[in-house]
Structure formats: structure tokens, C-alpha cells
Image 1 (spheres, rainbow over the protein chains, first blue to last red):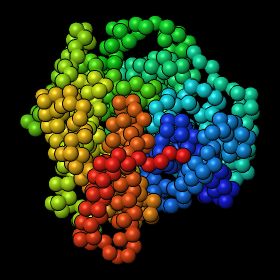
Image 2: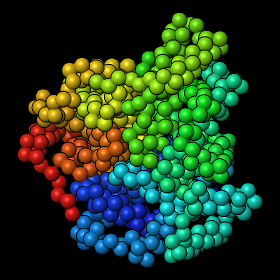
Image 3: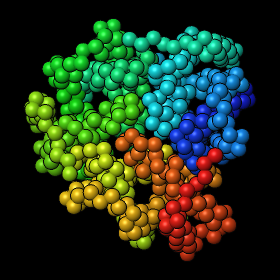
Image 4: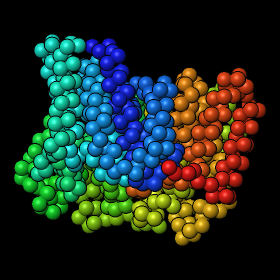
Length: 207
Length: 207
Length: 207
């Protein structure tokens, strides 16, 4: 099934997500007065940290190191963000264009994580871990570096989307129903759910 | 010798430790107002982060990913902790039942770390690193995530127990005296030392 | 080319750097009131964390675990630092002896990172990542553990030196001009640049 993760649609979804994630790294960095180099590194790590964690855990050399593209995207986002002084607009992260790209990335990254779990024959919670880590790991590393408690652990309905993606793919695979069409359904459903969750400001309860 | 780490006694010791570690993750998370999902992730990471670091460093796919059990334990601890509102009782971590389970886990995890060092023919400090990291790595990751300076680095006589376990196993192996009986002695001795250290609130000096 | 990284000159450069990095870990730890064990761990991690990250990312068992020497250096630095109460002298990190050893380490570690990138046929940004991470990764891990935003991300002209080393080695290799002599030139040039940057308190601009 891993070739599904390499279709052109997935490529563009990952690209949109990579840009949105890099921008969120840039914005978090400007709040802590990072310099240009620090902003570039934080943008890159936010966009690619999840994939790096996934690859390290599954004992592969991170694919990110073997290509210039992820760096060029983070560099372009940093330069554009800095030149247009995007950090001055508090509302950037609430713009629908940003929210949609971010949600597309969240879902696309969760799917690639779940497909790696499939490839290594992981049990149920292996799907959950790899989908969650691929999708939310970059944001968690970002928050650790700028010294915040990771946002995904205490607010929003965000990491939960990655977990739902993992559950859906696990169940589809168990029923031998995993195919391009059903994966597209998972993608669309999760994306809509994330946008609804954002619009209504869903939060998980706390005990 | 690695089969020693797979005896039933070690299994139950790791289980008791996993539960205590997960509970300490749950409690640390509630102090930072994590939601249910964040609490589950922190519980899981506190219990299993040490083993994951050990496996990544020794270039193995973390065994944790290949089994549902560690997740189910963390999930059960989180749900139970939240339902019984354990975070309301400041004294949970000072209850003897908790302290004993935590100490059993500390010693059991340190032993499995040292036995991995033995298996890869590590030198003396390889034993120390792997024992320390397996036993205390989860608590360090927990403190990094909730934005505290790792407790094990500044107070208590806790990480030192893992280092003493490593030294004992290294010396026993050098004398060709490593066997089930001597390992049981290391276990019992370290456990008692930890409980004494807890009771008398030992701290290491600071320069 | 990797044998270049194993010459005696590189060994002494890494040694000087390891001592300076370990000392900076010791000093950062005393500010957060770590105990002797915590100080030893932080010294060790600051000196060797970069190399460990590099080895984990390139899927090798960290060489550090297979030798006692890095630990003995960190231990000696911690003991000496504590006995001489170096933390009382605010200016330690501004002494020229410290600054030179630290700069030598920065450059030497960046070179070993870039040579690993060469060995795995990494593209341009793989050189940058591995040089930067090997040289600055230890300081970043140190700052994460003591709960600071990594200094290298917001001040000084420090991580940039590692990136320049990577660019120089990448270009030399592309021109088939990578040899002991040209590498010595990179070393000397980067070292002088770092000392000039320190003397004039260079900072990168912020957007």
C-alpha cells in the first residue's frame, strides 16, 4: 500500500502541510526573538520533525536528509515570512488559507505514518503512535525548543484527528478494504472533521 | 544473559514499574492542565520513553511499537487516574504502594538496560548510560514535555540507583559471577537502598 | 575522506572541544542547582549530544557508547569544575582559553559532521544538517534540559560557523579539491572567523 503515499495528490497535500507547518514554526520562533538562522531551523524542524521521529523509530535513515526540497521549502517560508513581517499579524494562524493547509498537512502526515505502520506489520497502537508522531511530532519538537508545554497535549481537537486517521486505516486494512478510494474517503472525512473542530473551537475534556 | 531479563519475575517487576511510571506521568500532566489525550501520551511516554531511548541508541526498532500492551497499561492508568481524580490527592506519590512500585520499576528497568549493554559488549560507561537511560529516561522526557528541569538531575537519590545497578552488573560480569542468583541479589539490594533513600529523603550534594 | 576525521590533529581538536563543551554544560547546570550526578550527565550530554544525534540520524550505534573516554572527560571536567567552584566566576565563559577551546570544538565537530554527510552521499542540505547538528546539537540538548530557549537559535554568530563549514566542504568536494590541505584551510579560516565574531559580539539580524 505504501505506493499510495507516493501519489501526486499526497505529494501536494504534504507540500501544503509542509508550508503551513514551517510557517507555524516561523511564527513561534519570532515570539521568542530567534534570529534568521534560528527561525529557519525551527521552521524546518516543525515541518519535518514528525517524519524524522517516525523514520528514526522505525530504524530508517530519515528520508528528509536525502533531499534538498524540505530545506528549500523551510528556507522559502522563513525568508517570505520575515520579509513580509508575517509575525506582525496576530491573525495569520486563524486565516482560512493557513488553517486549510495545516489541516491538509495534518491528515496527509497522519496517513503516511499509518502506512509505515502497515509496512512494518505494527499492531493497533503502532498505527496510532506512528500516525500521531508523524503528524504532531514536528509541532511538539517546536514547542519543546521554544520552551512551551506542547499545545497539542492540552488544547484543540488536533492530535485526535491523527489518532482517528490511524484507527480508520487500521480498521480498513483489517477488513481488506484499504484502497485508493477508501483512503481518499479517510482523507476527506478527517479534513472536514478538522475544519469543523477548528470552526467550533472544539477541545477535549480534562479530568 | 538476556534471557534473564525475560523471566516472569522481571515481567511482573516491569509491569509494576510501568504502572507507577505511567501514574507519575498522569500526575505531572494534570498539573499542566493537559487534556485526556495529552495525559495518555504523557503517561505512555513516562513509562516507555526510557526503553524507547535505549532501543533507538542501540539501533533497534523499539520493542514497544510491536506490542499493544504498554499502550493498554498507560491507557488504563490514565482512565483510572482521571475517573478517581487521583490528581486531587497531593500525597499519591508519597504512598508506600506507589513508592514501592516505582522503586521496583526503577531497578527492573536499570537491569534490562545493563543487560542490553552486556549483549552489545559495551564498555563500563555503556552499562552506566543504558541502565540510567532505560530507568530514568522516561521521567526525563516527561519533565522536558511539561517544561520542568528534570527532577532526577537535581534531587533525590534516584538516578544514582540505576548507576549503582550498572556498576554491580558490570563487576559481576567481569568476575564471571553473573547468574540468576546474583542478579536477584542486585535487585533486592538496590530496591532496599532506594526505599531507605526515599524514607530518609537522601539527596546528593551539590558543588 | 573519513580518515581525515581520524588524524591526530582532529583528535586533539575534538578533545579541546569536548572539554570546553563539557564545561559549558557544568556551568549551565550549576545555575539550575543540579546535583553532582546531574552535572555529570549535563556535561556529558553537552559534549557528546551532537555526535549522538548525528549517529542516530545516520542509523549507526553512537560511537560514544563504545568507549569510556568521553565519559571520563566529562567526569574529570565535572569534578574539577566542582572542586574549583568554577561556577563562582561568571567570566569563565569569556576567558580566552575557554573561548578558543570552544571554537576549536565547534569547527572540529562541524567538520566531522560534514564528512559523515560526504560518506553517505548526502545532498547539500544533508551536509548543513549534519555539520550543524554535530557541532551545536549538544548545546541545544543542554538548553532543552535546563529549560532555556537554545541560545544558538537567538544569539551570537555560532551555529552559522558550522553551516559555513558545511558549505565550504560541500563546495570543495564538488570541485574535487577536498584534501588534507584544503580541510586545514577550512579549519583555520572558520576558527579565525569564530574568534573575530566572538570578539566583536556579532549577532545575526532578526526579522
